[in-house]
Length: 141
Image (cartoon, rainbow, N blue to C red; front, top):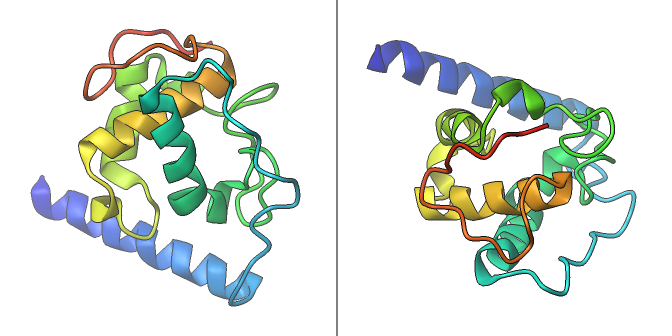
């Protein structure tokens, strides 16, 4: 199973790099300015917001809704994350395949912070909430 997963990861990385190359060496990352985290955001959400801009905005856009490379919104109206069901389900996906170019680029605590930021942006989590490592049963609607 481990070799199969490595093959999937390598294939996804190659596809991501091909898409980025097709879009140009420096695709338009932000068609809109990155939103400021909510004023009441806790440390985990603030860290997640920073990490999202550093590692995710290249493909998903600064707002999670304005990407030129992968234009499907990842939160808000028409979002794509409800299919994971819970925070834990989405974390497992992030752990296995994100960031697209190298899933090992950020550790589990950092992925949990990005997850918390995403769930706050989607309205599934209070800004001051703290997710346990790896997420939990918080439903994604």
